[in-house]
Amino acid sequence: MKRLSRFIIVCTVLMVSCGTNHDKERLDTYFEGGLSRYNRELTNVIVSDIFTPPVASRIYAYSNIAAYEGIRFMDSTKLSLSSRLNGLKELSTPDPSKNYYYPLVSIVAFTQVGKSLVFDLDKVEAIKNKMLGEVKEIGMDQEVYRNSIDLGETLASEILAWAAKDGYLRRTALPRYSVSDDPGRWRPTPPDYMEAIEPHWNTLRPFVLDSAAQFDPGLPTPFDSAEDSPFYKEAMEVYETVENLDDDKLEVAKFWDCNPNISHTKGHVMYFQQQISPGGHWMHIAAQILEEQKVDGVKAAETMSMLGVALADAFISCWDQKYKSSLTRPETYINNYIDQDWEPILQTPAFPEHTSGHSVASSAAATVLTGVFGDDYAFVDATEVPYGLPPRSFQSFWQAAEEAAISRLYGGIHYRPAIELGVKQGRAVGRLVLERLRKEH
Image (cartoon, rainbow, N blue to C red; front, top):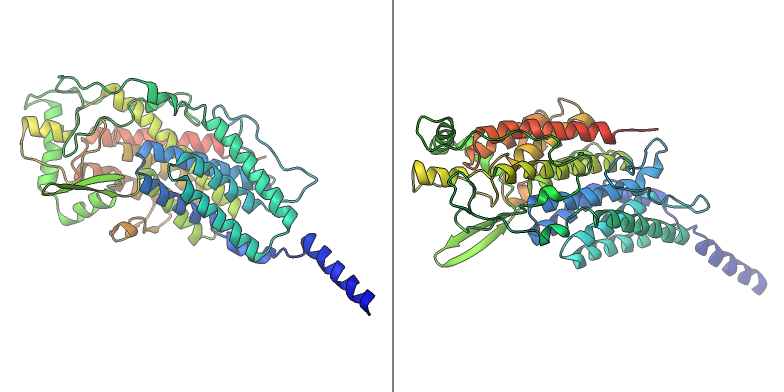
């Protein structure tokens, strides 16, 4: 009897160590919609760290590329993004002699990359550790668990090594933007008169563009202060739009504000309000739809990686023209030539006017999401609810993108050409992303 008891104990220990405590059904349920959840967690860190829109787009892109590379092995038709993204070398693949749980590989890679690209790395590390603790609690074969973490961390290190060569660090050694007396050239705007944000963003390596200038939208209307000039008329359109704004258009302007750091002054006290970036807004739209549709993990990662790349290249493309033309903002022009007391609805961002970043980014995003979900995908956008704004309903991604674009006129921060040319610019970026990245065996 004692001998039998010892045999049962030994067998039980062996069974546990060999991984019979692997609850795949509960693990699959736990990781369902996981990438959407973790993109939201990453957004919370991006917002609290107050990253500018271009920098935020870079974080989303690299993190979601890592997530895709970690989970694509679940679908044999899905190719690696190496060789399709500029400068990305061949990445590690699973050891055929080992077993893995690829949703875990994916989220480990995602969080490991995200952690290395933000300031508050402890917060992302805590998110990752919480996830690993919950996975252990559910139950996963120890060998599979270890193999999956190792592969996720390996992929993350390879993605980060690639990211380290994109020019992001080198840009900080380049000269600051020089303010001049040229009346048509951009200069800092009230209330903070911040210096120019990311004047050398076009020096970063794009993800799929052959250069930052590949889809250059062309120069803005020539600056002119004469009242009969085309440029004066464009400024007057901004002025009159804001002066006659109705409640519906005001709601549109505020919904698509997406300025990550708005300053408020009360008396002698200034405080700042953090909110989501344009890129973050579109990542959240995608995350919401992926959850609603219960899209499988591979397609979800493919979608988010394509969207991240489109947004990142949209900002590189847009910023290239911004600092080439370095056009003055409506607020500066209107105060100088039309009404010295005029203020826009939205706070003017600290970078040149042409083209509209939100127009470029939104059009690129809408192009990718339309390619994935179709032309007439109706949805309710609840992205801004955490920031105190009600949800808005759209009949398509393009309807949302067009509203985001025109919101810049309603808000008083862009002339019409920057909006219309920005839409074309973003559409071109999005099409190239779909063409390059939607390939299968």
